Length: 486
Image (cartoon, rainbow, N blue to C red):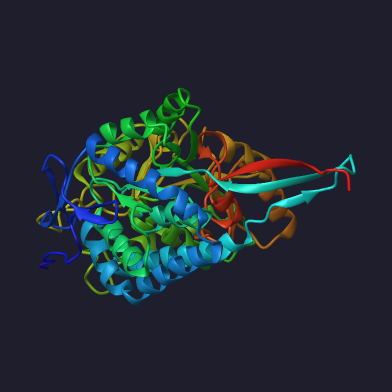
């Protein structure tokens, strides 16, 4: 189908003004479904980032002084505008990222909810009065916004992930410089149009599109940037940790994952199979918290396998703008290549492909891979060690609860884990025993604005969303107040 162009602004937003890149660069944005160009955006580098940092730094004192209630009005208005424009923004998101329109719209509404949540949570950033040991003193702990915050976000959730950084930073009284992924800046541009219409002051929120390394260089070199919030791969996160040492720059990192999904015999198999397939193939498996290793108790493994294969074969694959599509294209050609290599590696080492297993030839253009289910998976296969980010569902058997906990934890990642059981004792043991920051028990899609989101081990540092997501943008000041004799 013909997708056409988008109508959103394609320029950077710095210091309250839409502007081109300083050196005039541009970048074409492609639709992964048909490789058509949907827009051409301004594309700069370090000089543009420096300009944005300067604007954010200059705006910080005044924004910090704005009351939390007045900041909340702007964030809530932003949320209202995003909801009003949800259909348009979702279409833009699908055109640049590829996911089905219904998923895109759900993501936009989640982002709007995130702005509203932090608008309200900003009013509850309480300090405290601490009982003194000396009656001539008063002890206070108060919250102070970190300062200028730089945000770096990936392509797979171009509305949800930026909102988790921008909204709490603004609610806390910080100013921001946002760098979206090269491939998906248009959704963030839509979000900025809402922020601007909602009344965000000049310089408080800035948007820079450009090369990742030069922009990151500016973020790390400039002392005005007090914090960097990053979502992306563990490898890049480790490099950011190393680079943060020079200025002891604060970091929030939401990194890779390799989530287990564990099914016990007492669960409703039909419901679990449906939930497992939805959880796996949502956004084509290109989700940091997507289940990527499926452990099924051996007594029910055969029945569960038959169910998920049947459901997977029934998924409708196509352009995300078409009605009823459940699985869109993969995001880019190299993702397609990686997915094929993971399946080939598993097959060569003894895994059996039950459905799918190869790039789709159904479409003349775009990046398409068949939704895939495999069995006979063993620990040495790359699908079990690499973060897959792919529409591949590997099935494994287990017998004992202690064994499956050990297997699930046998990874450097610890972002999410999923358990399906109706046994309260089993659920409790799994919740306590699994090494993951997010655990969904009978819930394949647990993310929500009011609850903390983040990982353990090499899956990140800190938390987004919830009250923890706001606290990440504050420093805590201790004030000891000495009183004069009356």
